[in-house]
Length: 102
Image (cartoon, rainbow, N blue to C red):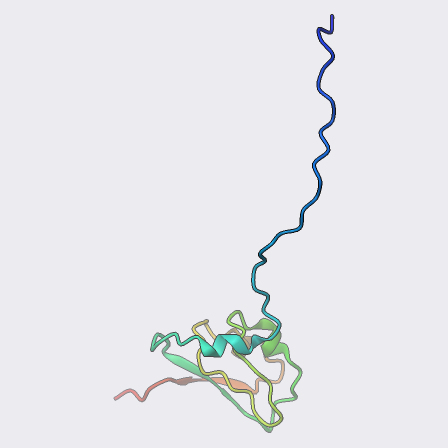
């Protein structure tokens, strides 16, 4: 095998940080500000006496719309299949019809 020519040297490219970054979401409260319309049939309803505020519902919610306040857990805009109902270890969340039927 014969090497012809000197070959290329390693190119040193200086690092330049990005000038624009993507937005970072630090809190889950931004999701309720996005109105999703009337696309759900069921809504989650909390039994505040049974709720232990273990935060499992917050961790499992794919919509990120559960915000824990001092005395309530509002969830007004979820479009997910109510995973919080299935994941609640003390069954403090139940499904209820969004609108009355009949």
